[in-house]
Length: 335
Image 1 (cartoon, rainbow, N blue to C red):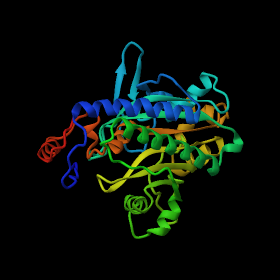
Image 2 (cartoon, one colour):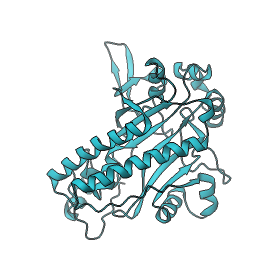
Image 3 (cartoon, helix red, strand yellow):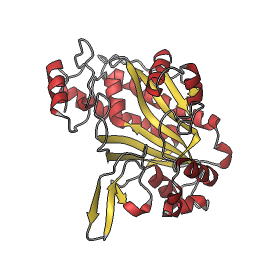
Image 4 (cartoon, rainbow, N blue to C red):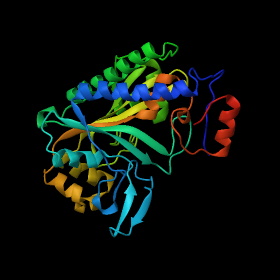
């Protein structure tokens, strides 16, 4: 059962044509701000990878990838869920040095996604990855990068308001950091999404750290694959969405696993079989660079800045008839 929330009295701020112009401006401006802030170079990336490469991201572990056979190659391919692993391998192949990095457009199909105002089966984001040193594998460096990303987002929003002064979204560059365990301790009676909402409502730009491992309650705050982020050095970035009256996750990111943390997380998650995959063998042998990276949602960033009530206002996807009907009656124009 899919769900849609209709904000009382909602009307789009921009018409259809200006919305398209604004989306293009957001993407162009943010890429400029973001790549300069993190010293990233743009590269091309795959839409799919071979099943046996170990490069696809299994997200929370239950999502099924879109698979198809390639007779000319004699292999089974999967549409990527994310490029978390591919990017790290690309940094090695392209000979990026410490301090350098890449970013790319990532387009994916997540067939098992539950559809609502902020979730679609079509995913579009900027994926990025940057080479770091052993000395910068720490929370202070992670927070430094988070603040740089947030500044790039806020600068983009400020520039957008100059081009489209009728827009009203206000974003704060002041980031409030909290760990998943601290969040559980603060709101022990709430579910993880409810904790996020309560905290981000009080702290409109927030970053939740250390997601993936079990908390004192015996449950993780949220699922994380064991083979890309180090669960002690990762985070999600949120902004408060006034239109939807809820938290909006804009980025999931983190310092990536090294050999030791990969070994631990494969054991902890019961994924020991992955040790024999090519990517994992390289990681366990310390043959890949130490990196930090993540993804930043393009459509989510656009809907936040434009004050949209539904992600379908800024991207073209597929929706069930009930959602189409409800949005049409409420004056929410889905592309």
